[in-house]
Amino acid sequence: MSRLFDRTPGPARVSRLARVANSSPIKAARGVRDILPAERAAFVAVERAARDRARRFGYQEVELPIVEPVELIERGVGGDTDVARKELYRLEPHGDSDGEPASRLVLRPEATASMVRAYFQGGLNQGPQPVRLFTIGPLFRHDKPQHLRYRQFIQFDVEVIGDPSPAYDVEVIEMTWRWLEELGIEHVSLELNSIGDGNCRPQYLRALQDYYRPLKDRLHGDCQRRVEDNPLRLFDCKEPQCEALKASAPRITDHLCEACAVAFEEVKAMLDAAGLEYRVNPYLVRGLDYYTRTVFEYQHAALGGAQNSLGGGGRYDRLASDLGYPDTPGVGFAGGVDRVAHMLQHEVGTVTPPPAADVLVLTMGDGLDRAAAHVGRICREVASTAVDYSARSLRAKMRAADKSGARWAAIMNADEAARRVVQLRNLVTGDQREVAWDELAEGLA
Ligand code: HAM
Image 1 (tube, helix red, strand yellow):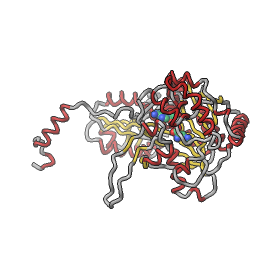
Image 2: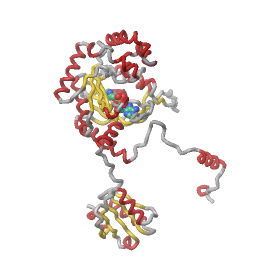
Image 3: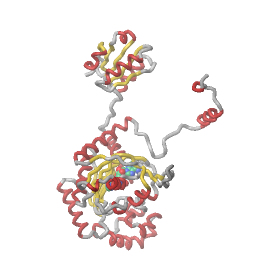
Image 4: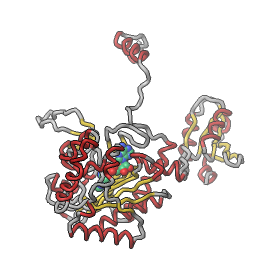
């Protein structure tokens, strides 16, 4: 007997079988999930609308690596942010066989720093400016899994790199607003703020520290440290005792320098002209350190709690130089595709998954697989077609066909296969007629 077909368990096989028998079925890792066909349809609709919208505004699609050097993320989003301190998936370092030292890599938690890196590394800074880019792909954050907060999720990310004009801030806001509008997602509120720049922010941070220092004991653990290390991050905290103190804290909008104040006025005026409603929220700082001036977020009350943001973004004029590249302004946005797809399914309710196939080829009797495959090939010229090769009775196959949402069943027994015909049944109306294989294309039209 050949080794290939030897079913007698050898010692290795026995221990493997014992292991398999003793263990429970393997499930997906915590906080990540499968997007199965019923749900995937909503994602497809969201991603298609994102691509259409971005292209209509002149943005070009790019694909970026999922692994990045840890320094890119730490220097990009800021080492003191939750994203860098607590949520990074760090990969085990692997040296290369050619002696290259092992680099420390992470699964990317966001795409903006990668986008800026790619802009310089790919020489896009040499061409006409600004450069408008977008990407859609998975991100990874080791956060506490909750409803609509996943450890792997998808973002629609757009960036305009190479021009400081506030008109681009508004363009990004308008494009992403229209994306949500086209999908039919209502009750979205646009929160807006300016968090100043290197000129005015240091003075504001001192005012913030003066306010918080006497209240330190009333803040929760991490926030007590932030008073000295990174006071702006105090506004990210959702703990009730910290929320309460936020309400009377000094507002950055009262501390903007002339240039930042003028830029903020221009953003608001252009949003007004575009007919986009917004609410200035002086405590909106967003959880990443690279922002300067404009920050914004789309919130949806139905999402609730800490997960109420459908997307957000802002300007990041210092990010390029923080990453070691020439000073270059940029502005962008990322929308949570999982959250928007959820809204589409549960609030708008417009997405019905398409049937797996429009035509099902069903046979009655044995030995008809080749004929069925041939008929399948003919039908696929004009319609999506699946062949049922199972040994089930025709009755069972018909029951499955009715449930599948397919429009047609092409049914065939041995006699019909010999005559090269099928019974073509319209599963919606129940009409059935004999059609020659050669005429199937017209029959299915
Ligand atoms: P972010 O606010 O960290 O910004 O993420 C943007 C959006 O991604 C959020 O509003 C949310 O919809 C979605 N999201 C974030 N974390 C999760 C999660 N754990 N599960 C499900 N969805 C999530 C950024 O990432 C910036 N890079 C945006 C940006 C682009 N700023 C400038 N350019």
